Image 1 (cartoon, rainbow, N blue to C red):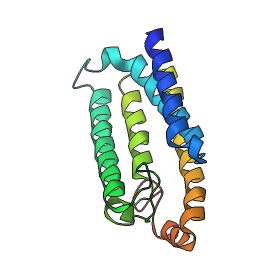
Image 2 (image 1 turned 180 degrees about the horizontal axis):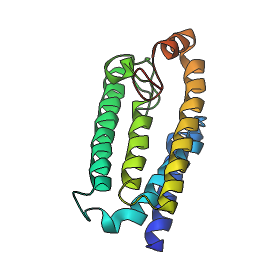
Image 3 (image 1 turned 90 degrees about the horizontal axis):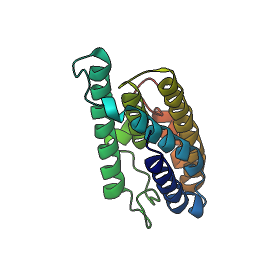
Image 4 (image 1 turned 90 degrees about the vertical axis):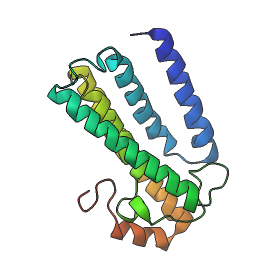
Amino acid sequence: MNYLALITGTIVIIIFSWFFSIKHGRYHGIPRFFAFESIFLLTLLNIRIWFHNPISIHQLISWILLILSAYAGIEGYLLLKRKGRSEKNFENTTVLVKSGIYKYIRHPLYLSLLLLGTGVMMKNPAVLQLILGFINLVAIYFTARIEEREMAGRFGDAYLQYMRKTKMFIPFLL
């Protein structure tokens, strides 16, 4: 593993987490740091085999998850930018977005990170990668739970009603 890349990437993730969340009292940035870091570590571990055995079952599953991740992330981000009327950065919306992908799930951006981490893990699902994939899963779950408390505080009963009508990550299931 390239230690310079590890150190540099970790510092960038810490700075991002501080400036976009924690500094503004948005404490979902703490567990989200661990999600970002686990995805980053998975990428560093698997980068050498990214295109190795391109038609193996692990690679095919990986690419499907990565494509779904891109869709959920792009769709969620664009809707927040377009309809959320954000203050300063796209996360600090002033309008509760309940259309598009948000009509079915509350956290498409976190779903994107979950799919991204799992997709990268599937490139080489060895023991260390499985552990990092699990860390990503747990970190994303806690990030979403903390953010839901923040959103309930920001949007009140409207957000609580929205929670009752939608699923967290997977439409109609979870």
